[in-house]
Amino acid sequence: MTNAEIDAELKAAAALLPAHSKLFTDRGYVYQGMQRVHPADLPDRIDFAFANDSTGIHIVLLYTPPFQTRNRVFVIRVSDGRNRSFTLGDYLTARQKESVKFQLRNAANSGDVATSWTNYFDELSKLLSQDPDLSDIVDGQRWEDIPINWMGLK
Image 1 (cartoon, rainbow, N blue to C red):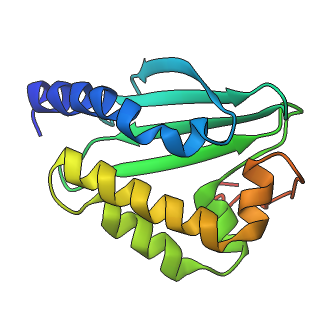
Image 2 (cartoon, one colour):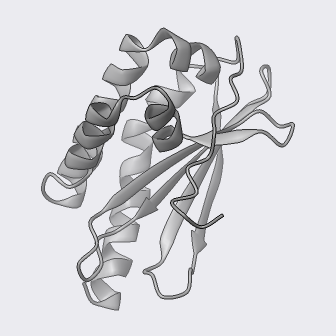
């Protein structure tokens, strides 16, 4: 993708968020805003932040458009406001649910930006309805420390 195409995709993603944020707002989360991030050697991404003041749980959805040989990426980070956090990918790895990670990854790369967002959020909604432990964490009813997958960096 060119820089102009990345800009267009990030604008499209920001416009798509309201249609998909219901998954979080229906659980008591309030949209806190977005921030465009400029990582070195990667395309820009957008971080969308949500907070649930009654539970103290925060969710950040990181969205990176496809770039060169890299696919479109969604990362969900859940934190408890007390310096504890995990990504959805690390949670799924810890639970040995690699097939679910694969389904989410496929959904994220299933067509144009609008189709990808719809498919990703459909899979995420299905996961939350089928995984009571994750649902309880997101709803602030319990917390679980999830090991970080450093992928050989530590």
